[in-house]
Length: 493
Image (tube, rainbow, N blue to C red; front, side, top):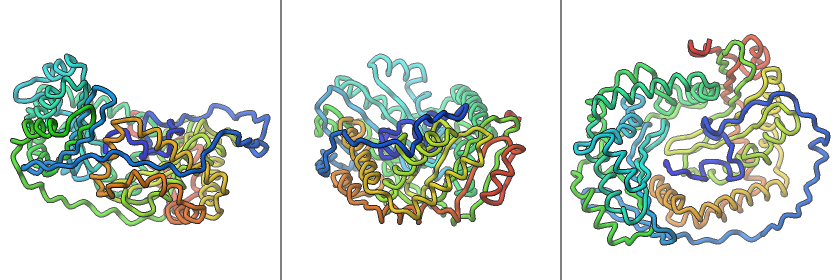
């Protein structure tokens, strides 16, 4: 799901978390060792902050669910605090079913570049005129494409008109496609120069082999090969009402919104969604190290992780708590160990990624080249610790309270509430899933955390990616598994 979802990261307190190795969330490597005048072992928690021991009890507003005759699902959530409306259209199956890597992304992003009655400038002008926001995307590894528009409620019908036009009648103009391809190639060149991007790329390849789940970016050749005809064919096949969920939140009336949904999307021809057979996730591979050589690099980017769970797995809550304890932010174990105790880095984090297929869990950091071995040693110390030692009661309680507090804060955001409703629908979760979320988190005990560690911090199948100067770090990283060396892209050499 594409709305910013706090559940997709470990906790609100860890805003810098690089759970998915996202560019904006990456920790930067430390410069020099830190002088610790007070050892971490001597720090005493005073526990003077006021803490409620009661479980958060909530009953969230439920989105009403409707079906148009053509098969499109409509979710409506009335929220009357502000005179605003947000509309999100989610289209399955997203990038994981791409016939060619990048097709879901290219199609979604090109929707805004022209329709049968509006060119790119006219679309941008119409959005600006009413002070609206418009976006469309399809993330690699994701199971849907998303088109989003938001504005004031007095522009509601204009928003529906714009959204339906770009979704139902895109023209994929050749001249705009050429501009788009140039931008994409430039962005790809830039990404290939970033160590965390290379680490992410190799990590997904190590877990998912040659399946669509492994793709984190298209190749230059794939970008160059895209044509307007290919985009139109993809749109015709996958953009059908049976694949679509239209979510609306804001200061709206359900009956009025249903009339607008019918007016602007009711003529969308009813077409049977294509049969999609998703690839099997490869079996876990034996532990290994992939070393991406960047000669002269003064830092090493490290990602270590393995396959985890689907979004609907019963272990989701235990693994969420475990992940928060290990690497969910500045108070988590990896941060306290690698940064506060050893001064190896500015930050070290972990993250859980889930979807309709088996996702991943990883720990990641960026350290000075000279402390690569020490950093790997401490990472594996923390892996062993979460697998073999019960979490102390105070630490477990603090982690659970942080997760529930983050959840409570998210309830003030109407877009988040819509995101929650769409998530429930997308994954087939129970209607009262978020009502019971605090209770499920609070019910996780130390035994459940350790069991999750043993099962999902799988050191025998750990895929370890190190991006750095091979001459300086190869001997160090080879202590953690057989090494496969990969050359960095030509721009990096």
